[in-house]
Amino acid sequence: MQAYHAAEKRLGRPADQLLEKPKEGQDVAEGLRQNGELFGVPEAPDGYKIEKPQDWPDGADWDGELEAKAREVAHKHGIPQAALNDLVGVYAGRISGLLTSAEQELAQATQAMQEELQREWGQEYQAKVAQAQQAVSELTSKLRGK
Image 1 (cartoon, rainbow, N blue to C red):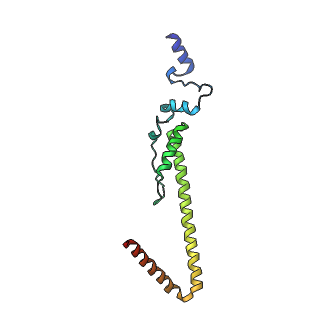
Image 2 (image 1 turned 90 degrees about the vertical axis):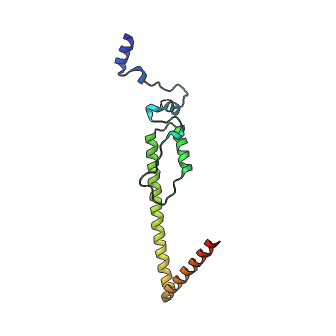
Image 3 (image 1 turned 135 degrees about the vertical axis):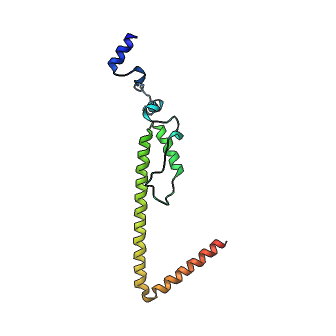
């Protein structure tokens, strides 16, 4: 018992709080999973708690299949919960940026198209736009009726 206390004093912590180095050829991720409670790695992929970030773009679909794959990959590599949350945040930021960029490009293209049509059609522009809107409305109602 005295030797145990001496070792504990020398190591600076109790023996049950020490970790062993991975054995030769042992996968580091395996060691992280084995000590999951200490490192924040759940016992199974479905143990990760992934939530849509608050800044997830309105109207953007959440990809459940991608989420499931992310859980599997995170567990396979012993990625802690906090790290996975950060990666999900990075992904959300990227998607938000892509959607914002696409919306801006669409608005610019729409504006350019309208300006081109106004130049080409001149005074007939409003009448032709009204005709096109009426045609779309009729087509939409026929498609809904089917």
